[in-house]
Amino acid sequence: MDVYTSHHPSSPPSVKALAMLRASLSAPYPPTKLDAPPLDFNLEVIESKPPTPNQLRTILSYVTPPHDVSTASYATFLSSHPSAPGVEERPQSATDVAELGTRNPNALKWPVVVDWDGGRASVGEVDGVANILEALRQRRDGEGKDEGVVQPKGWFW
Image 1 (spheres, helix red, strand yellow):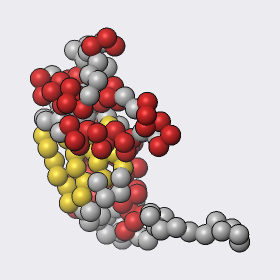
Image 2 (cartoon, rainbow, N blue to C red; image 1 turned 45 degrees about the vertical axis):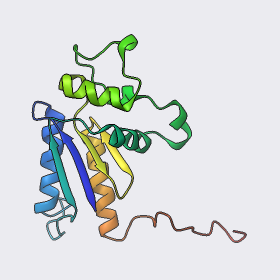
Image 3 (cartoon, rainbow, N blue to C red; image 1 turned 180 degrees about the horizontal axis):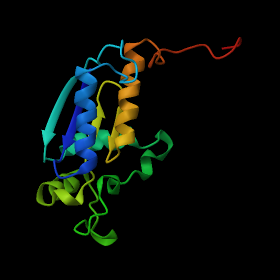
Image 4 (cartoon, helix red, strand yellow; image 1 turned 120 degrees about the vertical axis):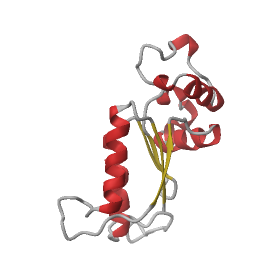
């Protein structure tokens, strides 16, 4: 399993999320269950750089409900920082977001955390990272739904 985070050290949510991710790899997870093993995943940390345009497109599809994909907006990645672009200047493509994040890191929400294997992502939210970790724990413990496996839905399936 691979988890990717685009981290910015000046962002408090990013610092907290990275600490959570690292702790889940080295200490019992969940932390309240002392006999639980740590999670097992590959953590790739990219510091102070936004995701690539291809990654941004994939991440946007992960954070957008399937019925809303056609109206998905790259504004999802923009922060409320005063240096972020206004409505008229908002990036309209993944390439524009990546370029903006390279020029002005404060304009983006940090962290961007992605569970590539599970198709989950969180942009700028520590709670979203906690949800990703919980999904990884469920997968580890055999509690998650078998994704991609068709299950009968009633007697007439």
